[in-house]
Amino acid sequence: MKKIIGFVLLLAAPFVSKSQDWHVGGIAGISNYSGDLSEKRVDFGYTRPMLGILLKRDINRFLTLRAGFSWGMAAGDDKSNSDPSLQLRNLSFSTHLWEGHIGAELNILDIDDKGFTPYVFGGVALFSFYPYAKDSLGNKVPLRRLSTEGQGLPQYPERGNQYALHQISIPFGVGFKYIFTDRITLGLEIGLRPTFTDYIDDVSTTYVDQNTLLAERGQTAVDWAWRGDEANKTGITGNYPVDGTIRGSAKYKDWYTFSGITVMYRIGGSSGGRRSTNFSRCFKM
Image (cartoon, rainbow, N blue to C red; front, side, top):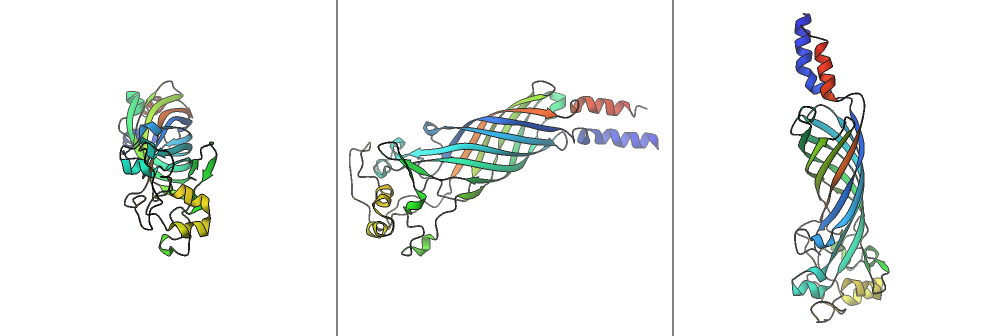
């Protein structure tokens, strides 16, 4: 009976030997955005910084649970687009992104055996944003309250209320980590975040009637809903578009990405590999 119990425990050791390992640390890197103001899938000309804190727990050698809180930025500007019609639109935005997430990592290799492993991860996140633009003097102009596409206006009930500033995203991506010391693990991670909103950049559908917007939200709203009368790369200025003219596309939701270098500090006893070795010695036949 003792041999049977020992054999079963030896088989289970790789899956339980790291069950009490916790890791705390952070990530520092870059954030990017994909949406109506980025003609490319990702415009690296508007790469911005990001920072985050991470908490992880190893369930076994191949499964790690994770949670974290991150800050980053998203930005875009029609001046960087090659399409003359987008340059004439002349819109721009920036926003801070605050994100809290939970998820899991699937480690491809046994990191205690190899000393490193690639991994994939996925989860769910709650994030907040508030798009703004800057005037010629560098002053920030919050865009949501202006109802630039008729959100919240009685004349456009199909647009609904103002878009929510707290939204859900689905983080997923790939990474690589290796054991630097017995306590410290270094890594590199690339994470994508598809969202369920098309208003991170305050652009989604069509222009609304200029006079209606003027009456409901004032001249500032008109000025920031259409900026084609300002200086732009085309050298051409135009008039405010008629009601229903395409301003953006609601076909695809906005995305953002957080990517960077991770540094994790392990809280617990010795490494899983050494614990596994000690574990096996206790049941040596």
